[in-house]
Length: 124
Image 1 (cartoon, one colour):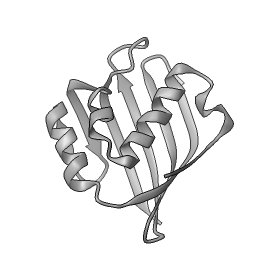
Image 2: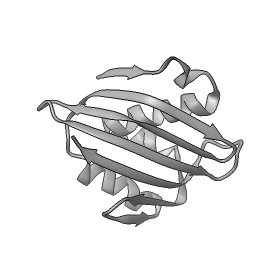
Image 3: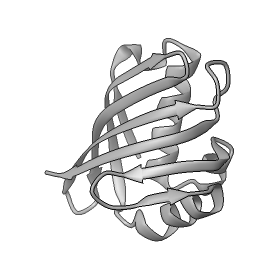
Image 4: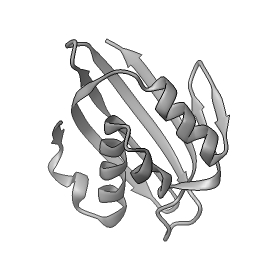
């Protein structure tokens, strides 16, 4: 999988964490993702579902993220305290493109455990 990211996406531990999370999401790496979620995580997919609980979120990744992503483009990662946001695009094997924005809330500013995530996806 090819990853294209802005130079500053890895210039802080939290930004690097988000970058790695985006890559694990694109790869559907359930084991990597499992370590990033709080037990009571809430994942809201705009215009679609609200999924509660680590097991349910991981099951949803496994069942519903069916596109074969071959490239992740990370445009921006913004962090502040216990929140972060990232936007970019995914390119699939059949050459379609999906623009994304993920907004994260962490259990605390110092912990890399996601307690809430809101996802916006647009097929281009």
